[in-house]
Amino acid sequence: MMPDLGKYADAVLGAYAASIVLLVLIVWLSWRKAVSVRKRLAEVEGRTDG
Amino acid sequence: MSIWEYANPKKFVESTTPILPWLFALAGLSLVVGLVWGFFFTPDDFRQGSTVKIIYLHVPSALMAINAWLMMLVTSLIWLVRRHHVSALAAKAAAPVGITMTLIALATGAIWGQPMWGTYWAWDPRLTSFLILFLFYLGYVALWEAISDPDTAADLTSVLCIVGSVFALLSRYAVNFWNQGLHQGASLSLDKEENVADVFYQPLLVCIAGFVLLFLALVVLRTRTEIRLRRIRALEMRARRTGVSA
View 1 (cartoon, rainbow over the protein chains, first blue to last red):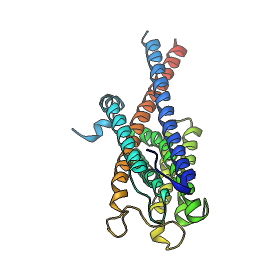
View 2 (view 1 turned 135 degrees about the vertical axis):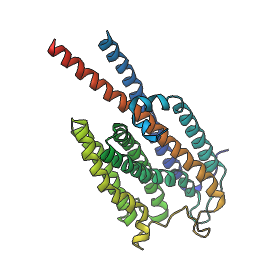
View 3 (view 1 turned 180 degrees about the horizontal axis):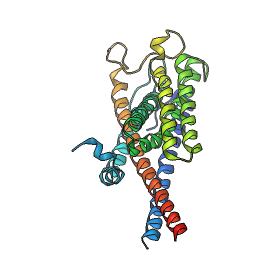
View 4 (view 1 turned 90 degrees about the vertical axis):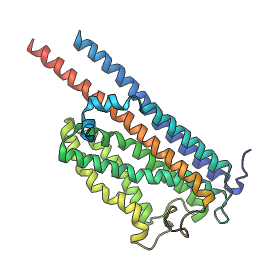
C-alpha cells in the first residue's frame, strides 16, 4: 500500500509530518480557546445577570 | 438582505453556528481525499521523483498564506472605512491561521529544495518576500497583543496590513517581476504548457479546496471566539463600573 518513495522518502515523509502536525496544532489550539472562552462568557453572563 | 447585517456580532455568531460543523467536515474530507489521492495514487515525476508529492502541501499552503493576508487587507479596509468591529476581529482571527500556512509553505519548500536545488534556502526574490511576509504576520499579531485599547489596535494593525500587502503581492509575483532566482513559475496556470500535468492537477485542486475550507472554518471559529472575548471584556467593565458606583 505504501508507495515506493525511493531516495526521497525522508524528504516527502518529513514534509507531510511537519505539515500535518502544524495543521492539527492550529485546529486544536483554536478549538481549545473557543471552548474555554465560551465557558468563560457563560460564567460572566451568569454573574452579571444574577 | 444586506451583507452588512453580518457585521453585527450577534448576527454573525447566530448565522455561523449551523454552518461551522459543515465547514470543518468538508475541509477534513477534502484534505483527506486530496492528500491520500496525491500521496498514494499519483506517479512520481520524471525529474522530481517522489518529491512531487510535496506539491499537495506546498502549493495550497503558499496560496492560502498570501490569500489570508489579502483577506486581512480587505477586512482591515472595511474596518478603517466603515468601523465594523467584526471585520477587524476577522482580520485578527485570520493572522494565526496565515502564520501556520506560511510556516507550512516555508517548511515544505525548504524540505523540497534540499534534494532538488541542493539547498534548504536561497535568497531568491520569491523566498525572501515570503519570509518577509512571515515576519509581517508575526509583527501583526504582536501589535494586536501590545495595544490594550482594541480600537487603536485595530487601527494600527490595519495600517500594518496595508503596508505588508506589498510583500504578499511580491511573494506571488516576484518570479514575474525579477526573472532570476531558483524558484520556478506558478504550478497552476491557464496556459496548458505551464500548468502541472492532469494526473497531479486533479488531486492538487482537491487539496486546494481543503486548505481554503479549513482556512474559512478556522477564521469563522476564531472570529466567534474574538467576538465572545470582546463581550466578556464589555461585561466585566460594566460590572466594575457598577461596582464602583454602588
